[in-house]
Amino acid sequence: MTLTRLTTEAAAGGCAVRPGTGRAVVFLVLVAVAALVPLLGPSLALHGTGEAATPGVGGVALLRGVLFAALCVPLGELSVDRLARRLPDAPAERPRSWAVFAAVAGFAAALGLASVVSTGNLVPRALADVDVGGLYRSRDGRLALLEVNAFLLAGLSARSRRPAAQVWPLAAVAVAEALRAHPAPEHDPLAGSALTLVHLTCAALWVGGLLHTLRVLRHRRGRAAGAAALLGLYARVAAVLLAAITATGVWSSLRRMPAGTILNQLTTTAYGRTLLAKVVLVAVVCVLALWARVRLRRAADPLTACVPARAEVAVLGTVVAVSGVLTALPLPIRWT
Image (cartoon, rainbow, N blue to C red; front, side):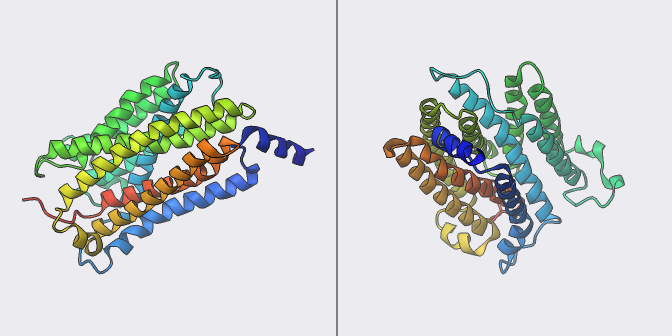
């Protein structure tokens, strides 16, 4: 009976996944890999470059990765739910939201990063080392507090009768991250912040949107036509997001590493090496996305596109972890 039921679901839903035990094992493996990337990545990237790592760089990279993931999940849910409502047979039911869990994780990560900022970017050894009042006296401290409060508001909004209101505190997190990444001494910091804001927002919509799309498809077993329509609609939006991510990513990289030095810095600096690894991973994601799009258009069962789409989500999770490492490493050049 169980085997018959699983076979029927796989044929009807297309995106039906393996039994619970298998999913749990795969999830734990992916989480472990995602955690190892920021913990081990900085030392590997810095090896032989002569650059000095900041204190606790692995922990900071992990917290940044968690913060980025916590931004992706709710933004993806909001965007895909809005896309789903545009379909003619859009169902009222939705998979259980992960927004509250993401807000809790984001709040914890932002709190950890704020504690590091409060000690002058040193890892606090005890609670007494954390100077909360000092956060109000620096730009980075105020931005860190903004992120903490924004995730708290996002979690409360996700539990309210109007969960769509969480988009505003989430937008505040994205703005704070964009401003934090480009301090005032940098040449033309507002331009850099604008590029980072667009890049981060589009990346969060892409990663979180694909994750939630697959969750919606699994929830809509037996509605193959509507599920394929939603996947196709997301694929069109994702193509635009990828174009924006590519354009802003290239522009931001050229601002960090001038064109005449970029090839050398991609292999001789920790920032460049990590950026190169991220580019390779994004290229793999693009191949998987193209594979999914071909299956969606040409396969007898369009929902076989879920196979490369699941692999795409896994690689995108690694990209998020690598992005956390990238933000924790020293910049390859000094602004003058």
